Image 1: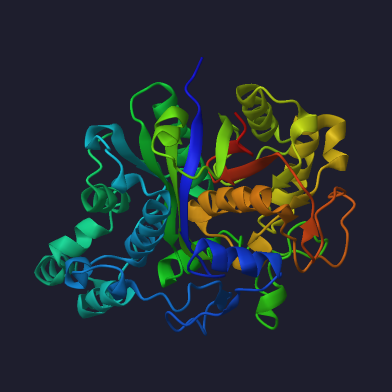
Image 2: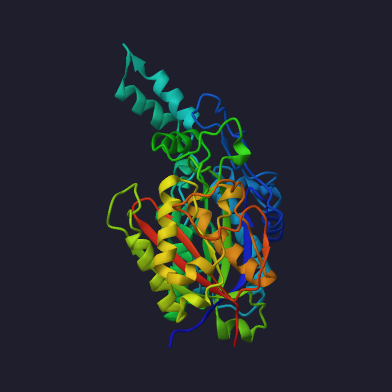
Length: 427
């Protein structure tokens, strides 16, 4: 039998608060973290709003801030959330073998220096076109090699292993919006097969920069409700018109059950099930019948050895795009059968936007808090039902309901599907 994997620490940096308890209070109270973009001048973009992290004082978290002078927001968010999770777990106070302590993240690439890049292009103009030789020469002279290294997606995991002396497996997956959920699932598998006793897992990302905004606008994936940003993210609502870009990080300490018990750790919940599939369809479109998503949910249930009736809550991927919300509704029906109509569902992206690679880990933490407190967060901005989305989406107000197990879905560009089943710990 596989070794059991429990959660003994959590941490997050989000648009709704820079700690687990702060974020959870915001979710319970249906607060909104969406507003005008302040990181750069977005006045000429089709979308001019996002869900930004606020009041995050990174320099106070580390003794040597200069060490991270070239680090992007993703790395800083990752460190902030990880320090919370490690501190909450107390795992470094135990007699921990560094070789049995690993890191597995689903972290996105670092923030691009858009303005510097555009300046280089402008300075390389000759007779109406870019002189490639001049551009290359200026690029090599001006770019900081350390800064370029920090853009790599594996850098958050590298920094965390160094900060916490985690000498075990060190990995990063970048499977778009499914990344941090997949990281938690794969980190669970590492512990199950006895390749580690403790894993720091989760994700971090920030795409609120000109390159990120441009890319999603070109894909027509973002809401353009500029006259009312706070109502733009409206998962499952008939009038949804796209998702809202967010940023942040969520981290958990995963630990083998007996290892956690031996040191008297607080156990927040258990990772019971993990499913991962591919649509094998199109790069930007989810399979119209939810083929991969249905298989993913069923795989997670089988892995957890649970029935659909055991699921008390679904934390939906719920992006607020026309296609995703319709197909996810179909997938939940296909995965849970008749129980789907009895299961409360919500999307916290309605409040904090889409954290891209970091979304799944923050949503997993939300499931743990829902199990702890018996409160299910709402889907805000839900005003007009859509006949294609006909399940219980917990509209606008949190709901007090005791649950023992939650399903968390994450679906990403490229046809990536991940489902996690997070359960109340019981001997």
